[in-house]
Length: 195
Image (cartoon, rainbow, N blue to C red; front, side, top):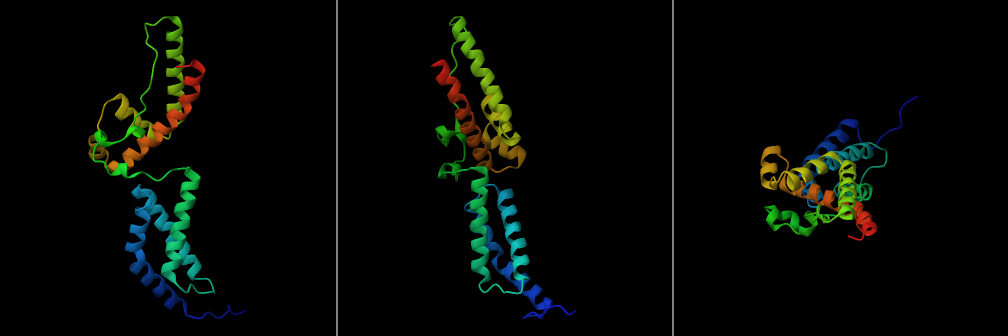
């Protein structure tokens, strides 16, 4: 049995796909990176969009406006990513060059009862520190490492960016997500202890 006829030979379709990818790649990368700060995540989305494009382009029904299709697919992938990770887009604060310019969403500002304020305060302090350790253990490794390095070891974001090769914006984002998670987790214990 013969395969169904196509409107173009496969070689023409492959060259059309290649031409479209080459023509649209830079614009599409810029579009994605304006919305996704982590370069690795942006690259993953780009590759997913191109893979989906190749699959869709080889279907019998042709894609009429390839550029519009690519940007719509990229937008859908970005929305899906934010829904899955329940992330909020970074504020323009991520453009800050140092932690000195960063706002309060990058600091935990942990309130601990004094260790010499009596047995009740000591007990409350122990509970808060235990809750903090549990909340830290729940963080993804990259968020936990940046939080510990900055808050506990006193390392600067610039130093960590230079040493790790990870962009400053990515480090700021990881710290911010860590702080938001820790605040949420510690809120309950603070309310119970009335601190």
